[in-house]
Amino acid sequence: MITHDIEAAAESLRRGDVVAFPTETVYGLGASALDTHAVDKVFALKGRPANNPLIVHVSTIEMAQELVTSWPDHAAVLAEQFWPGPLTLVLPKSDAVPNNVTGGGGTVAIRMPNHPIALELINEFGGPIVGPSANVSGGVSPTAAAHVDGAFTPDILVIEGGACTTGIESTVVRVTEDCAQVLRPGVIGVEDLANVVPVVESDPVSNTAAPLPSPGLLTKHYAPGTPTKFADEVAEDQLGAGAVLLAISPAPAGQKSIQMPTEAGAYAARLYAALREADALNADLILIERPTGIGPIWDAVRDRLRRATAAG
Ligand code: AMP
Ligand code: MG
Image (cartoon, rainbow, N blue to C red; front, side):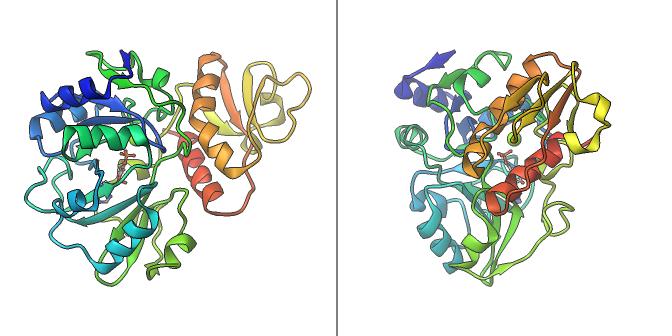
């Protein structure tokens, strides 16, 4: 059920229930991050494997510091520069954090979302909340309240917060005393990070450097129900009647298509809603015109498209 009542949503969190809330990246499935049972409900609702860790959302630096055993200078600098915003910091967890939040691992992922409703909800609740994307595991992330409404059984409260302005998930960075390392690409790129802290390169595609299994890094993820492929990977005759094309260039005459923005940030913000619209058309195939743009946002978009189009 969609609500505007942040107070009522905070009350639900206090009772140990799950509520969906808007952030600038995607809508999250919120529950008290310090309540093991509430966190269990999130895993159950999503059908998420227990070894896949959740991101904890905070509204203050002090709240973040309660969750970790060390707060390296590089974490302080990154938080100062990019919070609130789409950057998640992975740090050694404190005993305050239940083991199910971290998938049993010794590190916790933390982010301060840049959305007034998310921050108000956390403040009103008075503590950190987990917030994985508010979709069933493996599906397309929600970027509007309507994408979440009715998607779960039992039904949950969804706080209305408009369309997400970033539209794809946060950049995830492991932080140590020495450096930062990107575990999942997002709109904040390696160069942005390298302006303020030393960054070591990792390979988020093969996941070789990640310390834990990461659902955001699974090959097949963010995928619509309809088979989805890059247009340049199918034979010419698959374009046409049965397919819908997510087009950046003008679509061929007669081709069923959804026209995508040409600017990177706008494309990212539109991507998941467009995949959902394409899915709802009951086409045989969703085809995606492969973006060729340069920069961190296009790189993060291509990462999500690779996973949406992965077989299996
Ligand atoms: P989401 O599903 O968007 O909430 O993002 C959760 C993602 O954060 C996971 O898929 C991991 O990639 C990452 N993550 C969360 N916790 C950790 C952790 N402790 N270590 C490494 N990555 C993590
Ligand atoms: Mg997700």
